[in-house]
Amino acid sequence: MKRYPTGEDCHLPPSVLRKPGPMKIAAFALLAFLAAMPARAQLPAPPVSAPRLDAAPAPPANAQAAATPLTALSSSEKVRQNPGVQYLLMKTVVAKSIGIQKTRALPVEAGGYNLLKYCWSPENVLGAWGESSGLTGEMAVRALETLSWSRDLARAGYPEAPVAEVIGRYEADLIAAGFTEAARTRALEALRMELESLQRRAPGASEIVARLRCNQQPASFGLNVATSPEGARARFMPYVLHQFCLAQQIDPADAVRCDYWQSAKAEGPMSFAGETAYAVTWPDNVVTTGRFNPDEYRATGTVTLRQRPPKN
Image (tube, rainbow, N blue to C red; front, side, top):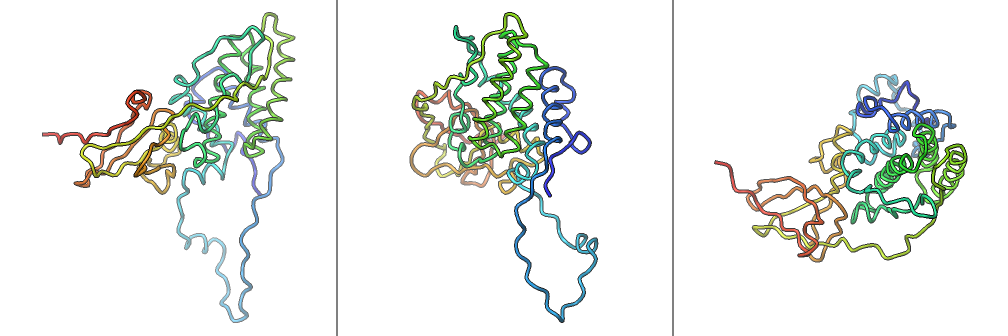
């Protein structure tokens, strides 16, 4: 049976434990809500063939375990195996890597604070990786969303600790349901109602609304990729996913375990939504790595990666 973690068997990132305030409150609130939820059954195991009558006796379980080589999980496998802890890890990574960039505060509108004002989606946060990153990408977007709520609602007159607990319940509902859109719709309505209740007890706090205004076409993030000299092989991933692998103690250079790399397209643009990590293998088999901000290349429409001269 699959169970959700409790405070006894979860190792929260040190950055969460050291940092007082809403982030820490929300982390512990989320763990408490997950621990209170009933365990969900795992997917059925593959069928096992019937043993032959003349087969040798099976070795003890501990001997089998000792003889079985351990297979290191990939980043996305870790996410699926333990979504609660991995979401908390993602939230600390987002706060450090893209939180400041992407969560620029918009003013509270005259009609109240709109929970849907930023219109984030996997595609406009991660570009070409919006779909392929799967559950990991959904976690990155929701982490960005809830971090902005925590900041904005404090500025809109709401007490930090109760807001952190309300957001923790929202996040727990999403994790329990696998971050589906239907679960988010239900959790968002519950969040709105809880915040309305808080607003009645917080004089001067802004009204809460959930007004969908995201029907416009998403911005184009397409950029062509070139290398100088030509003939190099380039691959990319959003910087937030690069940092997430590091936080999971996975080497981002390991394309098997840090399984978000995409090779440059032979023809046509790639969609880069934000800061991007790259690795280039040059014709002389030298590999260089780095990162770039795609917004700096929007005017020309092409990002050119240049081989660095050798150091003397």
